Length: 128
Length: 393
Image (tube, rainbow over all chains, first blue to last red; front, side, top):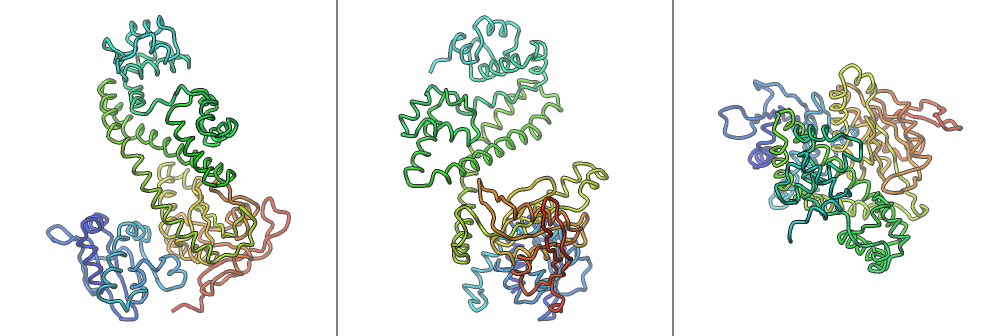
């Protein structure tokens, strides 16, 4: 599912180039699934805008780290989870350059609607 | 329509025909090329204004040569603000009392003198106002709305002009572009930009309206009608950067302003849906929201996000009945919230008893004690808000 979200961001004609330009490597940890994904802007020669790997064994360092459950991630990508409130509720834990992460919020907002559309069409049980 | 005569232009500018002739002879109106084009008339208006402010002909010539007056040509792209209608004629047309029109004008921030020369566009504006009142919108509310329109639109227009000046006009001057060439370049750019401004603002306005209508509907569901008319029970937060003055001294104004811009932007990006920044003053942002718990939760989360940044924010929150007037919130409770914030240290969220009582269970509050806040005779019970430790892990 997260692969689909990242693909949406990477391939979107507006979000993709902006995220590539912003160049903020991030590490997401979904603790209930024991999964980690590292994502960064594409480098010269790579055809996509974003590149991600489901491991910590990557040759770059994340600038921002976020830890949450898959349920919170699902709510977040539907635009239903306020980051600051989620942090206060300890539903999201953050680390690193949070200002850089905040700068990505307005860029990635269009993905909320795309994600909701995808859920409505394919995974209605995940809608909140 | 034929170009106006020298006599007509002199009258429009407010000088005698011989004076205007003298300016022509002195080369103060370089756009005059045998005819009074809009650009030439604009130059004449600027010369008249500068002469009235005591500038010599030589100073004006020098300013024109260096391009400092180039911006004036853009005036011609805007509708003529000086009309031919009197106040009584406008009153007769719209059915509004002259005194009410006068009040609307001053509330909007228009000069009282402009009531003597009401234009057709002004008259249309007054017809809209009459229609709003005829539809039943209360005058007391409409006057407040006019004040907000006036202040907000004046700020927008001021920013448009200043930013154009800073980022278009000044760079051209620094590059040594000749006065006339500069004027033409700027006029061309402004001619392209001006028609975009109104539709842009109109669309942004519609979007904001949709957002606030939605919030208002939710607000009606979640609050009762016990509040007095014009009063709202809200949570008020003041947030600023601890040590901002020192930062200004150490790193300079520009770096400090950048830090503030990023801070205010971060506040706006992270606020709960129903809360918003009402105003900013220097490094301080005033935030208001109907949901006390959500705003407090936001403050605690925001501080956690910012804990590795410098300077650290400090936030104070209080809740109570406020007077909603002219798009802003007033009253004792607002003052108290500001005083609470002033007592917070960097990284802290300080709150009062009403906030603690509405606080969500994912937060905990440590009582600091009764503190005498500046300007308040009774001590205020203050608490430190933070994420509840029991929920960790």
